[in-house]
Image (cartoon, rainbow, N blue to C red; front, top):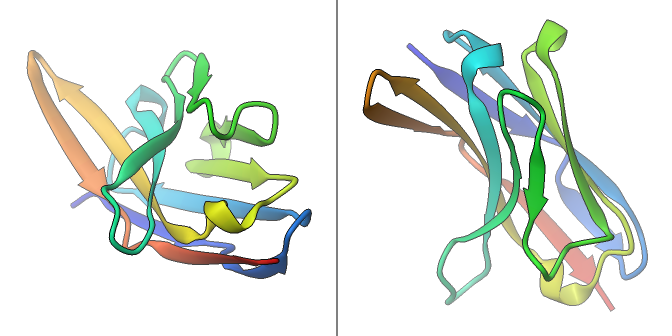
Length: 119
């Protein structure tokens, strides 16, 4: 059973920083591509950052230069460092793990952690 547990959310003023963590259990973590998504009230869930099993990263244009995704395979953990936060970053942030079994994609999700940025 694959489980993802996020932590690190909270409330911060604009310009501040937060670091989200996501611990993955029950899978071969280093084989997983990992993503962070977010969903603001009344909006669709959007992809924020990606890190592949090989360590390649990619970001949504709205967070480039401010957010950094990283992973520690020894700790089965993926991080999202968020700097220069803006009120529009307010959302529930979700950790997502992708595990390919042959040609079959398996997605796993955490419970989400709330990030609130006040102006």
